[in-house]
Image (cartoon, one colour):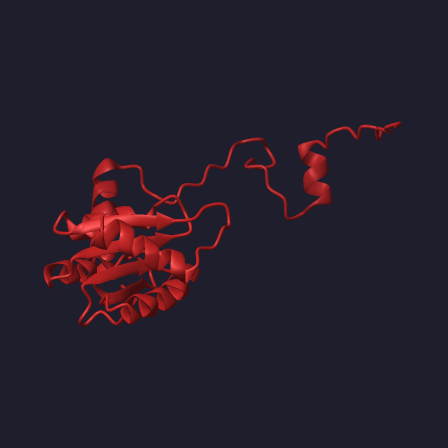
Amino acid sequence: EKVELFDQIPRMTDKEIRATYKWATNGKLEDGTRRIITSLDLDPYKMEAHNHHLQEKYKTIEENEVRYEKISCDDADYIIVAYGLSARISQKAIQLLREKGIKAGLLRPITLWPFPSKQIAALADSGVKGFLSVEMSAGQMVEDVRLAVNGKVKVEHFGRLGGVVHSPEEVAEAMEQKIIGG
């Protein structure tokens, strides 16, 4: 099959670009001097103070902005931690587990940052026997759950990759095999 190549158009000069596209910028003034814009002061002591300010801001956000939902966690022995589509599927999985007499609950992070670490730690301290992190990934949130639990109880991951969606039955089975029976 024959391929036709277009004639090459020569690159526009900076002057031609400015004349044609009034909104365009190339980082230089008309005289060719560079315009470097920085949003932060480069003095290390000012930067340190700025970073301390940011750390305080992050701490305030972590204390006031964490959002999550707990479903059937009050009497739960086992907790699924899941967000998004995985959380919706896990809601059905906890129903299936409860029908079998297994007290399962769901903690659904609404915000992944700030992460509900304190709430997960409180569940681990309250007698929960294990956590299953259900994700549509190879396991990212599970590390946050492990950090929150701090080795107090078992934490495992169940994930599907590539757009494969797990079923409620698979989630319930993963809880039984990895956490309860594992």
